[in-house]
Image 1: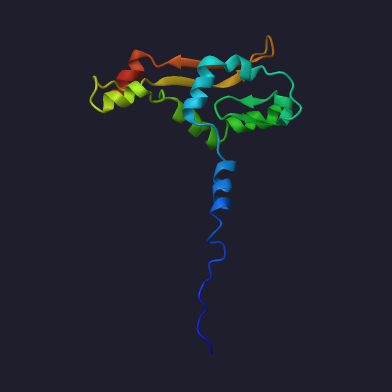
Image 2: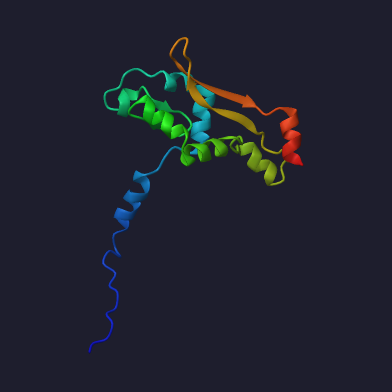
Amino acid sequence: MGKPQRRRKMHSGDTHLRRRWRTRSRKRDLDQIDEDLVKKSDELLNQEVDLDQPGFAQFYCIHCAKYFIDENAMESHFKTKVHKRRMKALELEPYSIEDSERAAGHGSFKTAKKRKLETQFCDPEDGKTKVLVQEATEDEKKMEIK
């Protein structure tokens, strides 16, 4: 009988394809999403009708930077692990250039502030979607240190 066959590597030279696969599934980074939360959350939540986006750009999760087909899909997304992980990651403020300089020894170190984020909700009075971003209270900060 013959020997076991050696595994052949079929696509060893397709680095151009690997690069495309990596960049195609990239999402917005946490610092970009934090910037959206701070500066233009109202614009993103109340967008005009765009026929190219899913759900005509009316159902947008600002924390995950995703469009959804309808309100039921968005509500079920809020209950998923992916959304909850993203919310947990957004609790800490993103690092800045000043933080990196402090870490390198140019200044005194400050711990990152923790925020209390809540999932966006639809206001029944005016029908608009809103996001709540709150700073952590002093008691919560003391609990985190202990």
